[in-house]
Amino acid sequence: MIKITTIVENTVVKARFRAEHGLSMLIEKDKEAVLFDTGQTDALIHNAKLLGIDLSKINKVILSHGHYDHVGGLKYLLEFTKPKVYAHPEIFRKRYSRLSDDGNLRYIGIEDREFFEKKGAEFILSEEPIEVIDGLFTTGFERMRTDFEEVDKNFVYEKDGEYVKDEVEDDMSVVIKTRHGLFVLFGCAHRGIVNIMLDAEEKFKEKVFGFLGGTHLGPASENQRKKTIETLKRMDLKIMGPSHCTGLLMTSRMYCEFGDRVIFNNVGTVTIIE
Ligand SMILES: [Fe+2]
Ligand SMILES: [Fe+2]
Image 1 (spheres, helix red, strand yellow):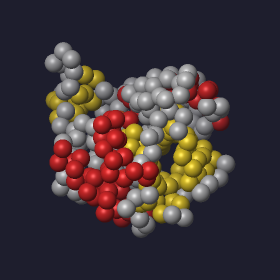
Image 2 (cartoon, rainbow, N blue to C red):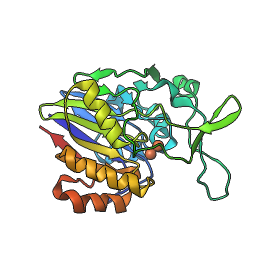
Image 3 (cartoon, protein in one colour):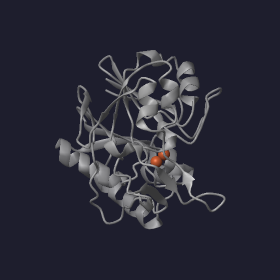
């Protein structure tokens, strides 16, 4: 049995939990646990306590990419545990968004490697897939394949003193092998959910039957949104849990298309895969 508990997400529908722009999900499988992303602040600690999750027992963390809303909670987690942290080698880029209230670039990256290592994180950086626990893998680098998905145009990073377009090459997702096929967890899916699922199917030689996580369809173009929905229809997925950067409008649109196959994944949602 696989149990996925959403600890941090943009939406809260139950009392006392904290919502924030961010994502963190705990995956439990065969008595092992892996934390996927850490949210933006100490909401991770607050919500985990309410959910009865003992953070001191977490010894494996996967980071989806180097944006503050997925890694910001790590420094708080490191006060409870000194885990192995799996990520892509490009996760520490100094990255910015062009979208800001004052017209300046807004810093959306994370602290540097040494900052986390001093607090006890042990990084395992790889652009290849890694089996983190039995049957649960990182995707490694996600290749772009579709002609309708693109990385957010507002992202840049500092390279040799210049700002260049950030293709978020460090974006990684989680793939779990189940008896129904592959189940995928996205952080923000900056390289496109269809790209990521097709990439996973090629790497792991099985079909995807469901996903949970950020799809970045909220800020995507209408063309990307429409073609993604068309493709999802063909893929005939059984569980879809669009979250975080999907936005309520796009999540509602998916619910209208796919009905009960869409889960409204927010803080405290538990997804069980038998
Ligand atoms: Fe995000
Ligand atoms: Fe992101």
